[in-house]
Image 1 (spheres, rainbow, N blue to C red):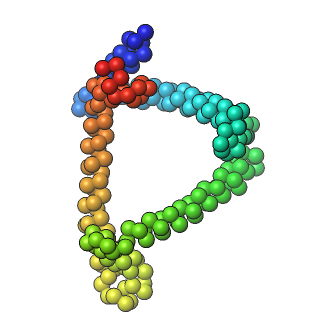
Image 2: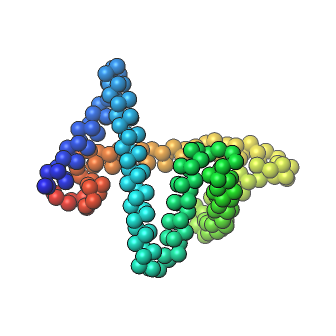
Length: 215
């Protein structure tokens, strides 16, 4: 039983993970065919994963509604909304104009997305206010760079401070690009480290247990 639950998934992960890594460095028609086959199977598995995820979501919220736990009203809204949109999508067979599914998309989903992003503006303004308070040297530099960039993006700033537009372009092109590349390098190294841990069985959270479970 332990083999089927722990050892076999680790073995499959190791074999396919190592094969995909080697495939990247082997430019051969057989290697490209293997990658295409893996991509096809990934789409099939993703389809089943979506079905499993939706079923798990409905089950969890149905139990919350049945027990009338705290916040069960939100679960009821999610439950009814998901089933309504799912049924409308099956009935309309896609987002077509004039259908109930199209009406839900245009007048409900789009409106909700606009509301959500408009609320994000207040959180962004609050975070900017906390970040731009010049209490430290780093915050002062950030505040100065932000003021120069904002001034260089409007005609009034260029009129009041000639040359601020070119300075704003330099800030966005040189320091900002350097910072973005540093972040991307850090993210890439983290992804590589996590992939190695998963391939060699060090990270086992996807099996439902901790990292050292079964070690």
